[in-house]
Length: 351
Image 1 (cartoon, helix red, strand yellow):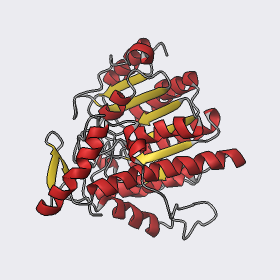
Image 2 (cartoon, rainbow, N blue to C red):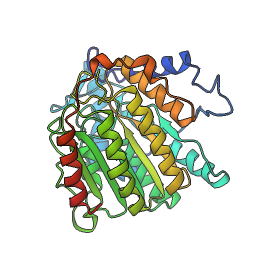
Image 3 (cartoon, rainbow, N blue to C red):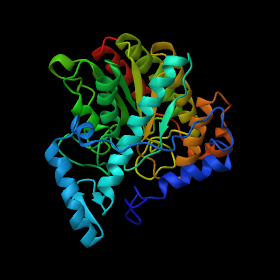
C-alpha cells in the first residue's frame, strides 16, 4: 500500500477494490475454505531471483534510491511511463515478485499430489510486464512473470514455460527477457499502436529463440468475438506445439471496454472465457500447473468484476458477467481486420 501516487492510474486502491469485490461475492477462503487457499505467509524474492531477469546494477540502484524517495516522498524512476517510486517501493516490489514465486511453489507441489491442482492468482502490484532487464518502465518495477518463469526452470526443473499476456499493452519487458530463449514461449495479444509501441507481428524471437515469441497486435475495437477466435486458432495450437511444463499468465484487465487507457472492448465475459479456457489448456498440457499475475486494469469497477469472474471460472462456476456488462457500451468489432491479423500470424508461425 506504500507504493502509491494519488490520481495515478496505477494507485494503491486497485488490489483492495478487487479484494472487496471478492469478499462481497463470497469468493474468498473465508467462504470457500475447501476450494480456495490463501497464502498467508510468503517470502520476498531474493536479489538472485530478481537478477535472473534484471541487471544487478538496476536492482542495487533502486534499493539505493529509496533514501531519496524517503526524503522527497515520491520520485520518478522512469520518465516514459511514468513509473514512480516511494520509500517502500523496493521492499514492496521484491515482495510482489516473491508472492509469484511462492504461488509457483504451491501449484507445483499440489500438481504432484493431485490431478487437478488449484490455479494460482497473484493479486500483486506494482505490475511487471513492461520492466525491461536494465530498468523500470510503464508503471512496472520488476518483471514478476519473467522472474517466476526463471524460478520455475531453476528450482523446479520445469524447462518449458508458456507465457500468455492478454494485457491491452504489449509486455515488452517479458518479450525482451526471453527473445532468444527457445525454452520460454511468450505470446502477447495487445492493441495495435498502443503504448509502448512494441510487439509488432514480425517480432518472433531471435537466434535459438526464433519462433518462441508470438506477437498479435489487435485492431482497436477488438472484443469478445476476436479473443475467442484468437484463443482457438492461435493460443491453443501454439501451446500444443510447444508442450509446456507450466503456463504463466500476465493477466491485464485494461482491454475492458470501460478501461480509460486503451480502446479494445473486452467484457467481463471475455475474461471469464480466458480464465476458463486457460485453466483447461493447463489441465490438458501440463498437469494443471498455471499461475496468473495481475498486470493492468485501471477502472476499479470493471477490474474487480472481471477478476471476480475469472475466479468463478477457476472454480467451475457460471459467469455473472451478464449482471455487470452493458451491451450499450459495445460497438461492432472490426472483424475483417481481426481475421487479417490472425491469418498473418498463422502464416508467420505456420499454425
